[in-house]
Structure formats: C-alpha cells, structure tokens
Amino acid sequence: MRSTTSGTSPFSREEADKIVAAMTARFPAQVANLVATWFWTGLRTSEIVGLRWSNVNLTSATLSVTEAQVRGVRKLTTKTNATRTVQLNGLALAALERQSVFTAEQCDVVFHDPRYDQPWNDERAFRRRFWTPTLKDLGIRYRRPYNMRHTYATVMLMAGMNHLFCAKQLGHSVEMLLGTHSKWIDGAQNGREMQLLETAISSPVLPQETKSDT
Image 1: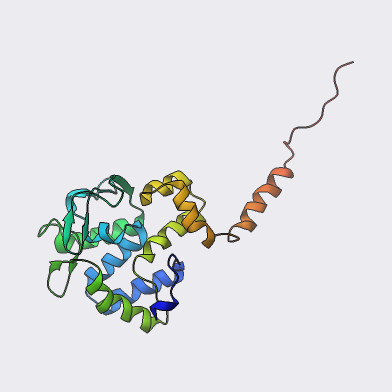
Image 2: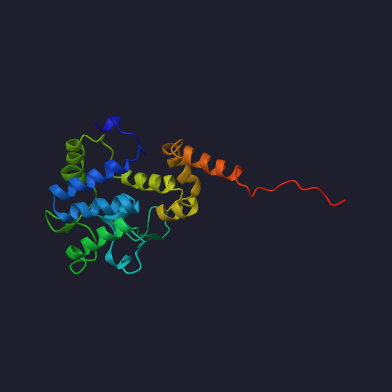
C-alpha cells in the first residue's frame, strides 16, 4: 500500500472530514482530537507529539512551537531551530478545547495514547492502531499522517491566503511553501483568478484617455 503513496499528496477536504468523523465514531475521543488538531494546525509530527499545554493559549487561540519529540526523546528546539506562533482556526481550537478535558490538569503533554493514558512516544503506534486501519476501512488512498500537514498548507493556499502568513504558520520559507505545495493547486483557482481579471478590465472606472484643453 505505501509504495503507491505520493510524498506530499494532500487529502481533500472531504477525505479529511471523513477521517475525523470515523475516528470520532470508532475510537476514544483523544484520537479524534489529535487528528483534528493535526489536520488544522499543520504541525510536524515531532511538534504535535511533543506539544505541551504550557505552549497553548486557548484564550488567544494561539500555540507556540518551541520544541519537538523524536522517538520518545524530548528536544528543546524545533526541526528548524526556530520557534513560531501558530494562529488557531475554529476547528483546531475546538479540538484542543475538547482535549483539555482529558490532559490539561493531568499532564503538560497535550496528546496521550488513550489505551494507556500516557503521552505518545512518536506516531508509529498511532499509525498502526488507528490511522492505517481507518484509511483502509474508508477506502481512502494511504498517505502517512505527516500528509495532514500538507493538507493544511494546500487548504490555505487554495483559500488565497497571504503566502508569507502561510509560511509562518508552517515554519518554513515562502519558497519552500510554494515549491512543495503549489503543484497541488495549479489550475484549481484559474477560474477565480480570471474572474478577478475580467472584473478589473470591464470596470467603468478604468482610466480613460482624455483630451488636453485647447
């Protein structure tokens, strides 16, 4: 199955909604909360596994990415050695608010494996027990959990959001953002962009040639 995957292939919005709904219906709530947050923040795997409540501000709807966790080892830095602030949209904020009921008072680590009520070491157990079976049952082409990040990036670009803002949300450069994700939106917005042009060139307020006074 994995040999057929595309490295940066995003999920469609319909696929993302189906995955979250299936996780909600089949598994403990903490699993669906993890997936919804992952889809709609675009965090790297190491960042979401290592996310801590001390870096989440539900009141201001932001989270700070200051550290990561790789194979159970906490790293007090990120992949790019830079911290960033992620603005939380409504879906991500709601998922974190739901998750706060389970772990906010118990442990600083946000997401736990509900089978053992312990923080995840990495994504491998999640992938085997929850992710892969769900995609198979839904008939959705397999892509690794990391592709939830690519999904978020693509959704932002297709919404026409400022490229610099999108890059800051994801924690990399504008050049990398466009180089990695623009191929998934090429052609998707052509109709909308051409309509903007048509509106502009048909506007009655376009500059008109005027005759000089004689």
